[in-house]
Image (cartoon, rainbow, N blue to C red; front, side, top):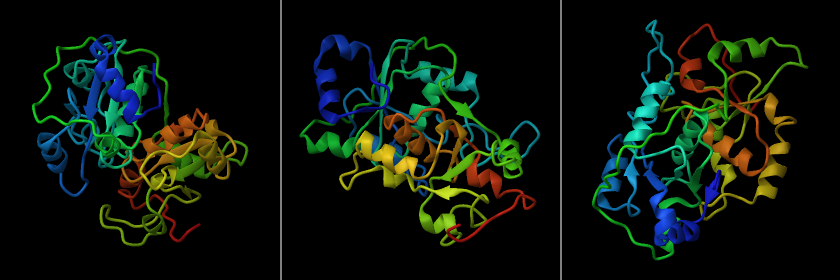
Length: 291
């Protein structure tokens, strides 16, 4: 059972093995925040054999507004029943090994990794290096859409933690002993409040530290070693269980959570609404600059 990362070599071996292939579901999570059709177009042009396509907006996210009509962020979590239905449609069973990949170093694949863990499914790994690592090894692509039978995945005890906007707001006034460290996965310029082109307000949650998700990767797009990640993360946090991961809309924060899991630093929480939800209410405080 693989629970964090899988190499292109490992995946190719699983696809060659008739036994492991029967218990394997590969999910293409490619996406472009500026072009909603780009991921599906890339999938249609060529994908890893047997891969199913997952759309970030419709499959891996829920409604942007809660039951009271309040904006909940650009990519809120899907409702559990909706998520289960989607995963069953993908052909995922309780014992399925899931492999998620994209073309962005795991930027979007990590979202599916976290969602599966949130419903208690541990057997999910992100393809290290994504489709680029797959093709660099000379592995084939196919253009035919995969057709899987309906799976039976069920809800089990969660393997994740999450907090809401009220928790994050209350955290600002918590005593030092109780306060959690917020880590923002966005690029440094957006964290500082500069060059904001996605959300209506620039800046960050007061007290947050910046850890751009791409800092988890080597130059070739693969994750850094577990030892290096551990050293780098322990420079930011003292205790994973007293840490909150956020980003622009709860997507790339999952990449930081994956990196922490690779490093053996489990227990941090996700703030799904992230900056897009936080900045939607002018009464919430906003910080700018690098501190």
